[in-house]
Structures are given as C-alpha cells and as structure tokens.
Length: 481
Image (tube, rainbow, N blue to C red; front, side):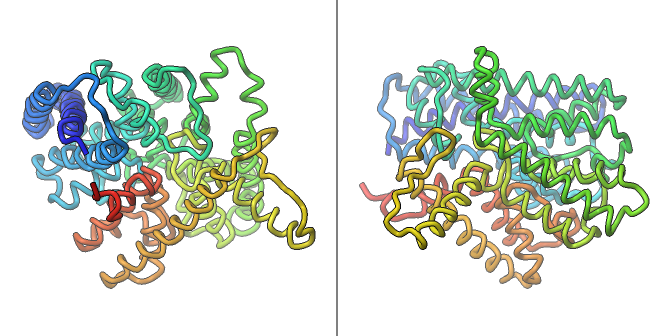
C-alpha cells in the first residue's frame, strides 16, 4: 500500500465535501435559519485540511495498487459520511450516531432516516440531506475523477471499483472522459427533473430537493408524507419519469447522443427492466383493485405504477400507506426492492442484469438434468457471457444472501423482533431504506440502539459499493505484504 497516494485522494475528497457544504451554508444565510455556523465551521475545516493534505502528498505518476484503490473508495465513503454528519450534530438536530446514520443513508442513497417530522427541520438541513444523496448517487469517486484532472493516478481502477457492474463497459478510451460523460448525463437529468417539477406546480425549494433525490434514486423528501403530501398526479408522473430514467444504465444515454439508438433498443437488460415495470404494474393493479381499491381501477393503477417504479429503482418515495396493502402487493414490492434497477445506474439491489442471468443459469441447470451432454453457453442477447462472469454473479448472489442473513442476526441480537431485523437488513443492504412495518418509519430507526444503527450503516455501505469492494478489506490476504 502507498500511504501518500491514499492520503492524496482522501484529501481531495475531503476538500470536495467541504466545498459542497458552502451551498447549504449560503442558503442558511439567505433564509436566516440559524445554521450558518453548523455548515461553515466543518466546511472551512474540511477545505483547509483537505487542500493541505492534497498538495502535501501530491505524487504525479505515482503507482497505485489495487489495495490502494479499495482503501480509497471505502475510507473515502466513510470519511464523507463522517464529515456530512457534522452539520446535523452542530445544529443540535441529533446526536453523533443518528447523524452518522443519516449521512450514510444520504451518501449511499438509502433514504433511511431518524427524523420524525421533516416539516420542523431547518430548510438548509433538508437541502444538505438532498445534496448528500445527489452526490452519492453518481458516486463520490466518479465525481472526483471527473472534476479533478490534476489527479492522474489510478483513474481507471477508481472507476472500476466504484461502478462495479457485472458486464462493465467503457464509453471512451480515457476513463476521465467517461466519468465526465456520466456527470453531464447526471446533471442533465437533474435539471430536467427540476424544471418538470416546477411546471407540475410545486415550489422551487421542494422542486430542487425532489429533483436531487429523484435522479439519485435516494428518496429523501422535504415532507413527512413523502410525495403523497402533494396529492398531484402530475407531480407523481414527473417523478415516475425521473425514476425510470435514473434507474437505467447511464451508458445508454451516451449511445443515444452518439446516434446509436440500435444499441439502446436492443439492450436486453433495458427490455427486462421495462418489462418488470410493465408486468409488475399490471399484477399490482389487479391485486390492489381486488383487495384495496375496489371502487377505482384508475387509482389502483396510479398507485401500482408509482410504487412499482419507486421500489424497483430503490427510491422508495411513497404516495400511499403501502404497508397496509394486501399481502400480494407487499410481496411484489419486496421482490422489486431485491431486484433493483439496471447496472450502471444509481439504483441498489441485485441489479436487473444479475437477476436475468441468475434466471437463465437456473433454466440451464434444469435443461442439463434432462440433457446432461448438452453444451449450453450462457448468452445475453447475441453476447456469450464468459464463464468468469458466471462465477462472479453466482458468487455475488451467495455473498448477498449470506450478508443478509448475517445482518439480520446481528440486528436481532439487540432484541429486535426477527421480522423487523430482517426487514431493516433487507432495506439497508438493498439501499432502499423501507420495508414492511415497522421498518422504514423514522420511529423504528430512531428507537434502535446505537450499535444496531452502526450495523445498518455498514450494510448501507456494503450495498452501495456492491459488497466485494468493502468485504475484501476484511480478509487477512488484503493486509499481507
């Protein structure tokens, strides 16, 4: 490992986090909500310390190892979450553990919260919550690679560690240009969402916050009742479109700009993603109409479409009290949380491509029981999936299930009922933040012991960084020279 390389990257991330705090500090000054110091002090400290660390450890052309990359990614994420918790503490809103939990839920786009009444929270703190999700959505490391051209080392490795997809694809020969393209797409989706919500009739502050947390598929809201507070199908439609676009692979937008619509239309994962939304909406509409909304098929469809998209993308915005719905609808929502959006998006969960490949692998195993001599390569469209990728997604699925079990048992050790323990582990590992009652409510998370919140925060980090990026640090082999 190379301490100077790691310190240099962490210094840049620290300074970037401090610079981001200047936005809510300025808003606090304008709105006079009394939190200028709560943002200004950590912003100043982070800028000074991060800048000094960055320039004192600069080593252009220095070699960066794989172990350096994993440490940069994991320590960087923990570092910005720790920094991001300071305004919540200094403002007096919450204690240290709750603040770290809130910040980690923000940067990992999980959306879990311990704040019971959002309407009583200062606007600058609400804006900071939304900004943490916006920054976390595209990935602190990818943004760092895009906006800091002075850092020339390990860019490709940093990008790969942050956006670990089952079938990775580089859009341009230079990895820094790829990161910039992703940032431009992300910015365009954010601006489009903001304008759409303004046109839908909500105020600029609410529109900005919900645009930030829609494009990041994070789900933080300025209202305790989430999107239900607006009671507007136009607002819901604008957010549905934003969630669908943000749950898709950002590489597809690059192909559209390059005049390659065929690569988008024929994308098997995209077709599966849209198919899940369509089929899930139809099934849930039928279930809701039969059990919950018998007087209105239109309302059943409206609720089914919104919640299907919301939970498949891991955003977890809500327009209804879905925890009181019929068991089939609840079960479908839990399934959508586990599947998640497309690889290369801001969503959580297993990802659609892994779900598709797991289903095809299972089908092949059944076929081989009948035809044991058959040679059946695993294919995705016209592309043969290499065996190393088959091993990778099978290994990922095993670790995913094992982590879910381990997280459930660790939370249950705190006296949490088994159902709620599983629900909280499930919600945090899939970075949705919500599950069946009582999980998902601020009261539930606020009532947990500090150590249980720490475990759930760790599960959020695991889910955001695709498990292996974090777990590799826990192996003895990683620390051997």
